[in-house]
Length: 288
Image (tube, rainbow, N blue to C red; front, side):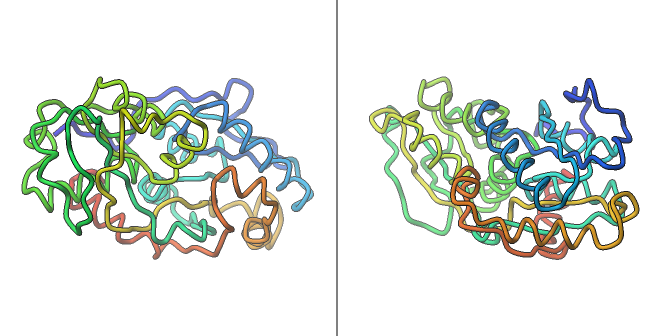
């Protein structure tokens, strides 16, 4: 099985940001799970909202990979990040005192969609276990550090089909993000793949999915996933009570346009303990 290094060497787009950003600027990032242009639009709007709510300068900085988001958080190049379940666990392991503070209302029961090119002839199934029909196909995950695009799908496949992905599939790939997974399976470059269910729905809404060429064949069981994590030292930099103010600002976010871009119906409190199942799965797969 192809292993993700504990801390991948990945370039981060921080040309103008020093490891210790100005004390009056809150810098945040997000895992690059979808098209970069959409991410930039989404999180610039979030930066503007947080600046107004917190009365501090807020800057969004994109990163080139999931691993780069963890690196930036560890190096204090960002103080806040929109992580997936696994990247959040990785970041908090590296930065003691960091806290998961908020998650989407849908995120405690997240899920993955397994998709297949229509040429495979695989029929959608409703089952608690991964379909046997996936065996022997070419298969692409998303990022190697993705919770919904790699970690939990690999766990379900191994649990249900009795072997690691390299033994189950003719060829295994890693697309890098959910949008590319759809493109690769739709084009036939891979016969099947897996991605976040919200990313699939985004691609459908954007008109990027041709149902004559690709379809969802299995919904995974649910698990906790995306959330906001903040470094434990932000109160020292921005003032006593800043963490709670930041948490409340995220929970109070009710602009329909902002929420639709995630997409989430709203944000709710989160804690490090909520993601213990993700930690345990990562350990069981020898990925943490």
